[in-house]
Image 1 (cartoon, rainbow, N blue to C red):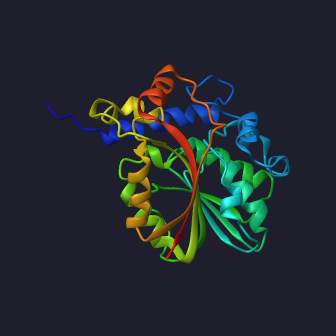
Image 2: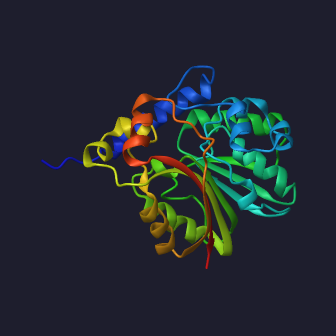
Length: 256
């Protein structure tokens, strides 16, 4: 019998998981969190020192891509799945007050935390909006750089995510991300398990197919590299790494 993923169940599991990460970052999860993780992944210390520490407490990224994004002063940046704001605040440090950063997330607790930190530290050119990365609340062609960290693997319709990326980017605009992919396609029993999706395993796409989905949306893949410093904690994730080559990559693509 063919089974299918329940997207409503998946979204609820993801929201529940990342509500806890926002409100209780000190707890143990099936993934790493915090500043030590960001430093090991390659985030420059000077960037981390300049952003709200509480945003870093809830950081749950899977790689570093700042050098690929090469964000410049005055640019418009959108963070897909912005969480508690780490990548948004880092981006804002590089855009400066002449630029603008918008974080998009579907988890209310993450949005509340990120916006509170932005208001408290007077990041007037950073704001956070509720939304789904498959349906961005943005007009066409206004974004210079899209960033995303460990989020797209959680989206059931990745083609829609990349199509939205292409829609909102300006010509020549960049998509810089870190995400979980696989070397071999995952079996149906894993792909249809919402709990494994929420654990950043079940939604991981085979890497060649992932790149092709980006190209099919009208983006040119310019760089891909592995994030060997990222570690999976749960036994199921460790097992998946061995069986199907589940891994983290960073990637840069450009709208052609």
